[in-house]
Figure 1: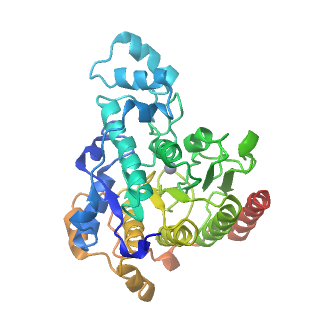
Figure 2 (figure 1 turned 180 degrees about the horizontal axis):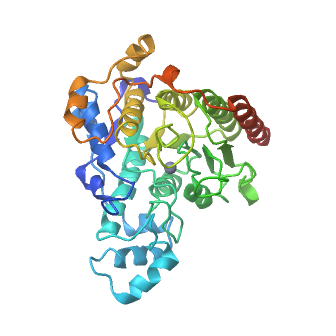
Figure 3 (figure 1 turned 90 degrees about the vertical axis):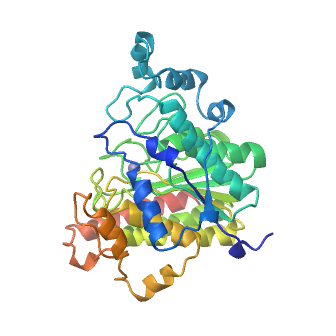
Length: 396
Ligand SMILES: [Zn+2]
């Protein structure tokens, strides 16, 4: 085994990915890729040699996780003026909704997203890089024959399918987006070689409504679907306790060869689409836990993807930069440990403040001590602990 500490991780990105855009008022806005890229560049954390371009996924790669009828519908509805027949078909494929409306060029740009996640997987599995990050990916809600929740093709499922087909190893998928990772769970619900672990706000109050702790997989794969639904208004301590304990139990039970993780950062208190109350602390600690797990149990093999995150100014650039800094073992993290009030680079704030509708944060972490306390904290913590204990009991 190669010494993974000495090799450089890969950052999959190019400007094609910012074209994944439904319309001007849609909350899914890939300008956040640019804001993150610019922040990392300004602190000198993104050397040119780390950057690898995505590519288009092939038809065969799409068809590993989507039905031929769905891929055809996406292709036809990518036309700037789709014919009436295909417009009538759009609802059957979930592509007529306010969340996931069809748009011109959709097939091509989403194929880049899928190809980017496969490139990231291949870099790691071939041994070219210890870890790989593809922030344009993580579109975890797309189903086999249906677009959903801002997701057209499911790049996470496609990357896992690539790993399974070419390398035949055991994959642990870890989804920390505030929404349940339903699309990936259903892709592998009956596959005992892929374990999906999703921690999210309970589906009682949030899209997509699934992700109950009782969803455990089927047939030979019973036990390889793990869900940790958390209460609304969950804060850092309870979130991290639930995540770290269940992750450790899942790794012990499943013994993965590689980790594929999805890094939606919409569990943050500022996020407009959900109700959790986490701070930037979880987005510092999640990557650290995953890296440690990958190094200890998977020979370092770790592919990380983007995901949700709708406060594109205050949350996403910091969260995703911390993810890359962790993957690349950057010295800024030790500085952050010594000084929790470490400032963001002034030049980044000056460059983007004029465009931002909200004041940009001054520091990498949030001043949580000045946030108002959450009512019912003890009750929320206790309920989450009960859920965690059920999830862990299922893993013993
Ligand atoms: Zn989400």
